[in-house]
Image (cartoon, rainbow, N blue to C red; front, side, top):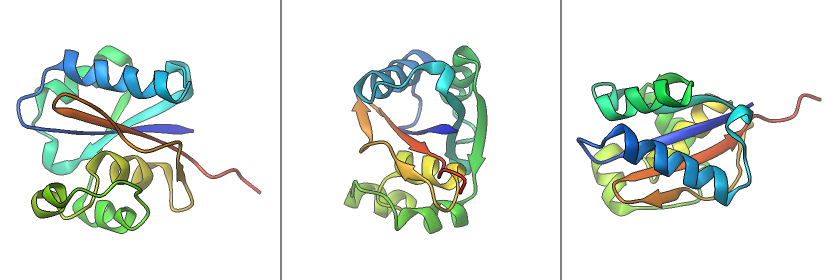
Length: 128
């Protein structure tokens, strides 16, 4: 399972979110049919652009509670002081993807940034 974690500034459009997700997919050579879910912080639950983007991409959107974001925040690779001040985690996109993909999940790569949107892809740990 691969999860697309999304972070954004307020008021982003679905087109901006979709473009960023597609950019992350292209950078990491991931196809849309390999992505199981889109994840974003619960605080972004009112962002119409993120909600519409998930629908447009055919992905179920998971709203990540703050506590789960913070728990996954220790495993991110990108660090933004601005994002820490605003959201309490170093990378919203990376923490969201990791939180939903599971405790032993890993990032496919660092977050991808396109304008006001960030996207990170995390892969669920292989079952042993």
